[in-house]
Length: 177
Image 1: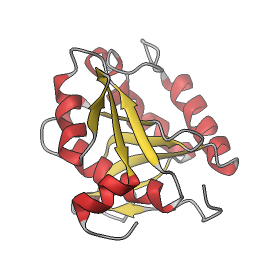
Image 2: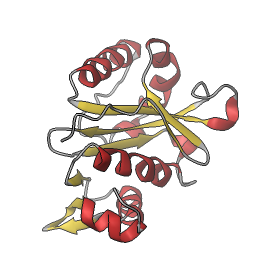
Image 3: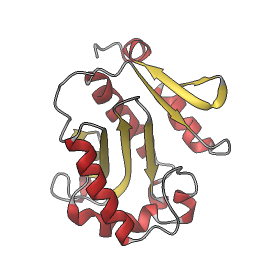
Image 4: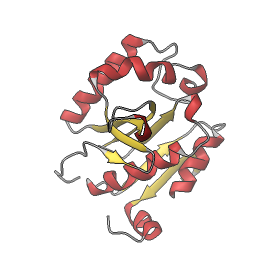
């Protein structure tokens, strides 16, 4: 991995992905705290309360400072000042091994935000020098499977483990990474 700085912000057509901030917990906890969201996430307790959210914000900041992971909150761009819109979900990459994780609040599912988030963070992760990204999904999580496949991830071995290499990404996007 290169010593390139971690991005402070990634913009897509409808979203801004930016580091979690101290005041964000009150806004994202109701989204990730829903059982229908948390049940698909390997590392999220349920119930998920405000203290869990505040602890996550602190951990994400520490991981960023230590270059352990890049964890970003996705907010809608249409809601006012850049980066201050309504949270819709989160996305992150563990920088040691390229594991990708993401989630969307229920009101924001099924409208392409997951694909948009992944398409933004993938080139950022490859620009940091990661040679491959991977994700593991629950066998029944068909929506997440579709998101990964739309972005270019392919099943590896068992159908619950997906991978995307920097070379494949360059081929799919025809852009240098």
